[in-house]
Length: 542
Image 1 (cartoon, rainbow, N blue to C red):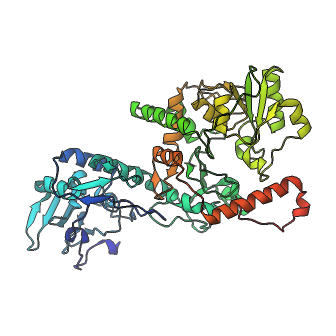
Image 2 (cartoon, rainbow, N blue to C red):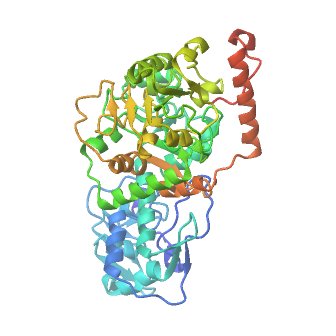
């Protein structure tokens, strides 16, 4: 604790010496962006108290991503002057200021220090000290501080350069703060492949280096493990189990990228769930709780409606986009689409689903009858030869009228009359496009009154939701997104805009990896695995 108490040593604050804005973009790993703020020549009119209220609500300003060390248990004076009071707690530049201010009885700063805005926003008594040691109450300078730190700057979105109001800039920092705070609790992050880290790291960053691979047995206290569970080693699973460690699950988001995970294309969206994971209906995930108990504001519903329309108009799907037109090969017959899945994927094995794509096809044919024109679309990872889920050709010929391997999922959904799935995300994408959906497992979107449910939906799912409430929960509130241009965590709308115009592009190295993996996949489909042996290796998709 002695490092926190002043011992008559000098402490110079850079904030009082250099005019700079109160808000800044956190240094997310690998991010790149233009300046967040530039000074205005004249300060427009502003409501100081509204700005202070917004700063306090979102707890931003200064290094709000900084460390949060232990503080004294008793009341203390927070001192950021060059001549601190005896026994005062010093205000270092690398510490989260809200961690300090909210635990302080009062704040003491050099005259003009912009950090005084944070003390005023937190409603803490503030004293300014000038170079001669004279003191002045900080609340006498509210307007000048607000002008100096917030209102006197032109704020711009790092995503597209558009102008932001001071309130919008504060809210964006609050969005980043919420993400950072959620990540501070992670003691170790496991199961993240190297090729994913470029896009996943900013979404898991908690103000310090993401703790990839820190051994779970290194600390005596109970640790929190953030993990891509299906990619854990047996030793890691055993250690987590025997020590009953808390596991926060990580998985791909519902709008993922412009390419396959099995092709090693990094994800632009993930979900991070401390309760469980959305595709396991045996336990209530955070997403299920949002749908069962959440209250959605009109602003959220409006955002969800606009987001859904943007996704449909752009032809976006989990793995990219497709806006081509697909003809109806069955004429006037009812066209039914059945989507295959990876049979050993956790969404199938954990989703109370039918055990195989063959069994799914049998059930659907029995459900829709012989008059329906049944189209089967294999999962792209299965088709590429990376994962299991092939349907024997003889059985496929008897059950399906057509096997579609070229057309995109959005284009197929636009053409068909209804969709039947096990637990596939294609069901959610079809709901967004207004098509009837029948499910045989229990995906996250089943049980809310929007689907025909053939699976064993848990009795706890009793709420009835509108389509836009489902979209708000599943696309706005649950996942995390990254802007492929800046590498910054971003709201859902930013990623949808960027994917709509093809912003994510594969570099030469990534295109080479994709080509190699697809060639290896084709070999796997035609040659027995014993003949391949270990001769062909590519970067692991795990």
